[in-house]
Amino acid sequence: MQRVTSVLAWLMPFGLLVLAIVAVPMHLLDDHGLPRYRVLASELRQVESENERVQREVVDLSRQVEALRHDPLAIERIARDDFGMVREGELVFQFPE
Image (cartoon, rainbow, N blue to C red; front, top):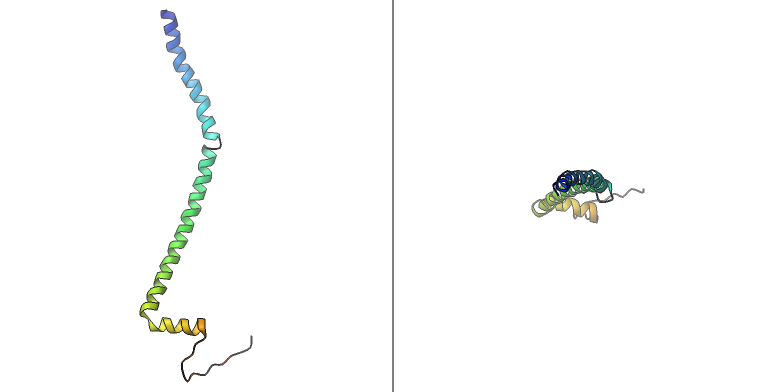
């Protein structure tokens, strides 16, 4: 009985070690392991980059909104450039393209 106990005391840790040596790399290298982590890390970098770009765009648009709210020249510039409006008495010269 004591011999069986000593063999089990030796065999159990050895078996767990072998299981860990085999199982850990299998889990790391399967589709949900390290390759998946690398794909997700790459996607995260892309999303963060896109998020920074969108945040810069939001800041630019916020500046434009503030200019339109408080700067009459900004409104006039848009009226002239986007809508082709002119002030009364101005002459408009059009050149063929």
